[in-house]
Length: 460
Image (cartoon, rainbow, N blue to C red; front, side, top):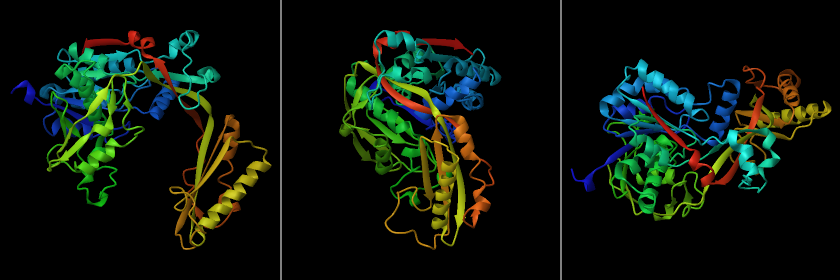
C-alpha cells in the first residue's frame, strides 16, 4: 500500500466521564482500528475530580478507566491498538500507575508501555505565576484571579498534541494525560503517524475537526440526534464514531459494521456545530481551525467524507481551567398531582420562601422550576392547563455559609403535610448539601507552561 493511500483509524470510545462503559470494548473488538481515544474531561469534571482528590490524595482521575484497561489490554496488544486518554484528570500520575498495575494483572507485563504526560497542573506554581505578571484574568469579566486566589482549588492548562506525539515516539501503548484538549487525543496520533509538522496548518486543522467529531462519542453517530431521531436504528447498541484519516488530512467518518445508530451528513453536522463559538476561529493549542471551510459528502452506508479544511497559525496563549470554591448549594424536589398540579406547586414555592424569610435566612440565589411546565422553555403565555397530570417542583438555593443551606434542606419535607395537597416524590429524603466549585477561564502565555510539560514512558 502506498503512503498516499494509507489510512489511520482513530476510534472514539468515550464522550464524557460516565459514558457507555461497553463502548470501548465494542470499538476494540468490533473491527479494525489503530487508536482508541477516550475523552473523560469537561470543566465540571475537573472540579469534581479536584474535590475527590481533596478528600483522598490518591483520587482525582477517572477510576473506571482502570478496570476498563484491565479488560481490554490483551485485545489491544493482540490487535495493535494504542490508547490515548485524558482520564488522568488532576492526578495523571496516580492514573498511570493504576493502569500499569491493571496491565500486569491482565498479563501485559514486559509486553506494553504506559506513557504519562504531566505539567498541565499549575496549582503549585500559581503564586509564582501571579508574581511574574500572569494575572490570569477571567476571560469573560476581566477580573484578576487575585480576587479569588484564596479560594482556588485547581488550575490546569489545556495542552496540545506535542507530548502525546513524544510518548508515541517512545513506544507508549497507553498514554495518560491530564487536561489535554479533547481534540488532541485524535490529532496527536495523526501527527505521529503521518509526520505532520507544527506549521502544517491545514492538515492540523483537519485533525482538529476529526477530533471534534470524535470527542463526544455517539453524538455524531445518531445519539442525541435531532434530525429524524425516531428513525435512528438500534440505539441500544449504538456504534461510536471512527475517523479513517488519509495523509492529506481528508477523512471518512464511519462506525463498525453491524453496530447501531447511523452516520449521516446530518448527524456529523450536528456534532460539528456543538459547543461552537465563532466557526471561523476554532482555537486549539496547536492550530486555529476554520470550521466554515468544512466540506461534507454523504457516501452512504454510514460513511461521510470530510475535506476542504483550512487552518492558520496557533496563538501565543493557552487556555487555563481554574476551579475555586464559591459557597454551597442544595436542590430539593416535590411532585404534585392533578388536579391543578402547577398551581399547587406554585403555592408550595410561595409558602417555602415565606418560611425561609421568617427564619431570617439569606441566600445568594433561590431558583424555582416547575418541571413539566416551565423548566425547559420558560414560562409559557397564559396559565398552565388545569389538566396537567403532574408537575415537579424543583427548588434550589445557594449561599456562602453551609449552615444556611443546611437549614433550607430541613424545610422541604414539612410541605408534605403543611402545604398543598397531592404531593409525593420525597422518598429520597432531605436534599444533599454540595460545595460549589465555580469555573474561572483564563489565558496564559504558552512559554509559561510548555517548558514544564513532561513525558515519562515506562514498561508495565
